[in-house]
Length: 61
View 1 (tube, rainbow, N blue to C red):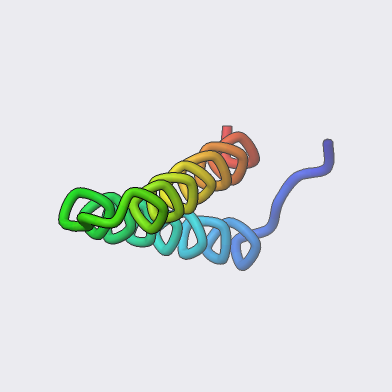
View 2: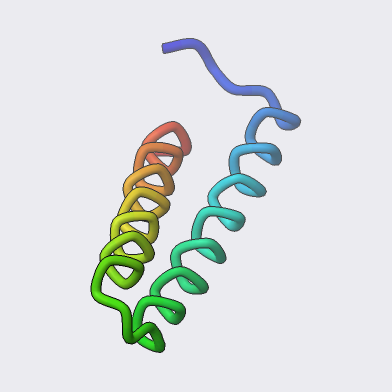
């Protein structure tokens, strides 16, 4: 894999932070939700954000 430049690393870190924020918020929404269908939607979206964050982090390692 080619080396990432400083701007690309900075952008990746920003994206990782954004996906972590999305994960935290969606998880909190799921915990507060009473409708099972909407709760599953929030949980799946939170998991998707977490998975994407992990993929992005792999570029930084």
